[in-house]
Length: 406
Image 1 (cartoon, rainbow, N blue to C red):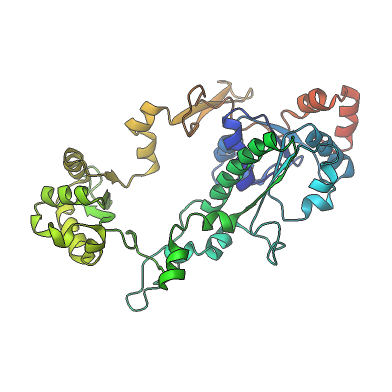
Image 2: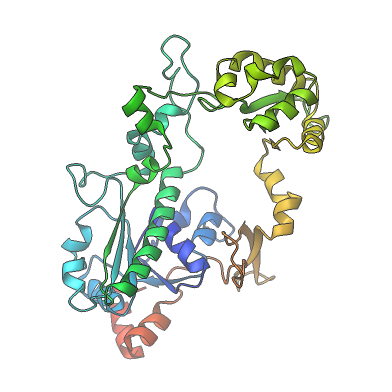
């Protein structure tokens, strides 16, 4: 019963590995993500075709008691409910754990919200953007003010809904843990309480213990990482085919032996030896190290840097666009990108392919090819209600005439 990103992404991950996902959507409008961002020839977002892959779409109006009763009956026959409504919404609909566990004690509730199901902020609406800010994540993204060490201007955000996806990952992981736990708890179901703020907090590495023990308040660091040297984005000569576009390369040489190989490769043996041997030594000399690397990379194209670093065994990567991602020989060889057919009988060709990410992580025996793209709204309503709930065609017709299903 998740909409937009966090809940649906959890369902996408589980569905890729064989879970049967029944996506409940409101009739007529469906999940708002169907019409977010770029729209395809049929008016549906290609993003929706990806995040709703392998799912069955059932259109049920949860605003009506009859619709909620249908969902209740589906839940009684299910292993897991995934939802990302404001806390308390399911309870108001009579679909919370207290109402459903008597009918299905093994049912797992995976609940995604901004701040969690408890605490003084639980009732607040919590979108990923504000939760990223409240987790401290946004503060460390951007360029530092030279005087205060804090942000020089507004924080830089990744151009994706990172908090939603990270929460979706936690929701899928938590669901699998709950399913494993159920095997040892006499089949008793449980609640997986996923907070976007806490999911982002889980990414914050040593920031909190460092503050607690050393009083260090980590701030933004541009394109580098505080306390790890060298790892940064460095300028290169523009690509001859696109001389007006700046070119950057990322080099990660914070391993001690890798650092020495990097310095020897760029002709800066003077920046090696005992004074540069370990990371804590190099942190004290970050300025001269970064300047030396930048001076070298700025005299070479990205291709030249990559070739040289690969020979030297130094981790290196180009800062690429999505076009270059799609064309990547590595990703193509791994099957990391898949073409999935979208059927449309109104077109002479019968539909089209949409390219999307494959199935990760790669597991033996799991096909990386999605079974089908995100379905049309309510495409599986009749099939699911007939097979899972045993409704007849007459009953379905009455429900449809009453606008309870779509």
